[in-house]
Image (cartoon, rainbow, N blue to C red):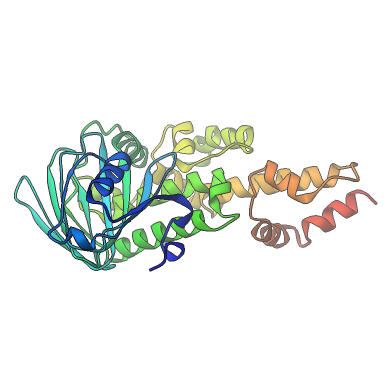
Length: 330
């Protein structure tokens, strides 16, 4: 595969045939480890990666048999999603797991040493998620503080609906980062998608909190949503996530979603989009500046994909934003 065809091509770290260079590059991005290969003469390692606000996303392939011995990750969870080939792994408590392309992955525990054997054709997406990010996200979903390591099962089944959704969301995220004009330039969308991926991870992996996450969520009445609605109105031009909205209302993210669906028939983020569209329309209607551009107003309120924004605007108001702007100047 050419470099240009590999995921995260715009975020290249290294392509090398040198074993020491390969080990150091992975150590710099993820964690220090031991790397061995019985066929190091065939090594063709590629590492592409980007550090985002909530986690690091990367693509890794060795092109030959490779064995990685990794100490406890301590402050991070590592999520290895196998997209080609196979791997076999064991950790210090004796748990073994194998992965197949698009059917399995691993979650490296912060307190376990892990050894992974890569087949020559193995390729992976690897997320490095800080404990602070994931445990805070879980706390928001549950509406209570999580203060200990999330004890994930070692293996991650990507053939289940939740597992397939996790893989699809990571692939979409990576494609969009690679695409010119994609979410790399859209902090609002990027933050929301990172949060969504962490929610999908918590839904796909097995851990002691999973049954509680999957249980029916509480609903609250409209009055208890008033602090959330006020927070949205005051911060509609800022990057907002469901986690922030839940904290504003002193409730879990699951309760927030259930309550918005009950009271408004839409998700919290759909409600945020509605408020932002109202602000855009108000500016376009009130405008008297002949040089004002729709893109300027849209981006000010968090709409960076103009085609999608124009469709949402037309669906809501029955006319294009440029029609509204022209009408305001007549």
